[in-house]
Image 1 (cartoon, one colour):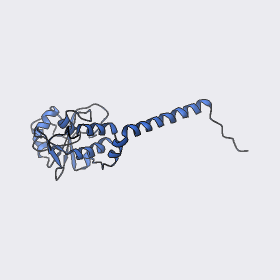
Image 2 (image 1 turned 180 degrees about the horizontal axis):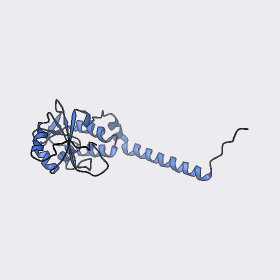
Image 3 (image 1 turned 135 degrees about the horizontal axis):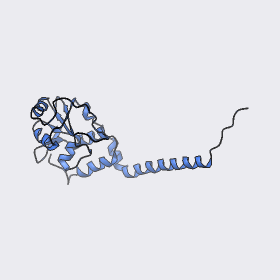
Image 4 (image 1 turned 180 degrees about the vertical axis):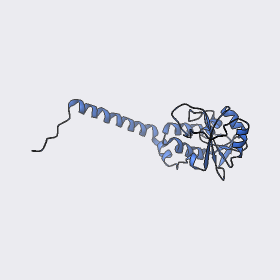
Length: 192
């Protein structure tokens, strides 16, 4: 005679009910909070910063502001650095500098000035969940991406490109995407 399946106990049914209710609450919250933002976000084709060219990662020996200033004429700043330059706050907590360059000469110049390490950094994870030394992520490309110039003279990626890079770096994060859209509204926009 075949074994009969044992029915779930009251505790097992209650645990399954709580698990399912929690999942439904999360899904409902995402739909309600995301709404039109979610629809705009999923229409974007992500740009993976690190795959746009040859990425060179160097540990910083100076403050990120000094590195940014030293790269002002050579780089188009991207991802978190672009957000910090344009709006004073970024998406990521690491304090790294992300920039597009057309050659490695600026990296060599910064290394000679002892602003960055000459040797490549072993830690190449763009978004890391642990604290660490700030790094420069330089993506060497043949042609710089579209940019806008800030009043201070720094070049950063366009607002549309920044949206694509955000999705490429952190994924579908409606909270960060909403923050970006809020600060990039026409009344808050930087010079183009």
